[in-house]
Length: 82
Image (cartoon, rainbow, N blue to C red; front, side, top):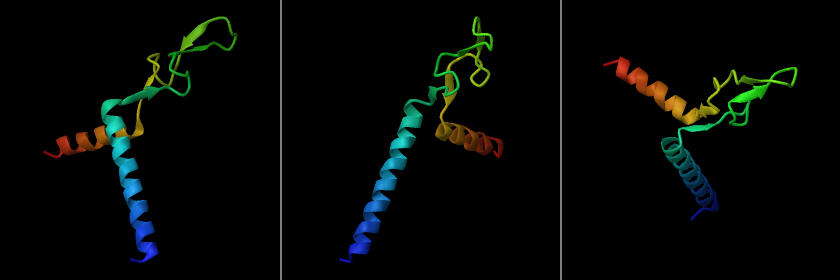
């Protein structure tokens, strides 16, 4: 067998495994910590004395993963086309 074919097939299998692993992670854990507030849901005000709710996550500390957001968006398009 040609070494290029073996390398290409190994690369394709690795990418497939990585994609399936991410899809399973998005299914099991659809949310991740907000990067802006580190999952706390609040940030210090500019004065440093008080806390304010994080604007990006609305104070929940959680954000939807990109893969789950794409899945939800495509599902809503499919439901709307029926």
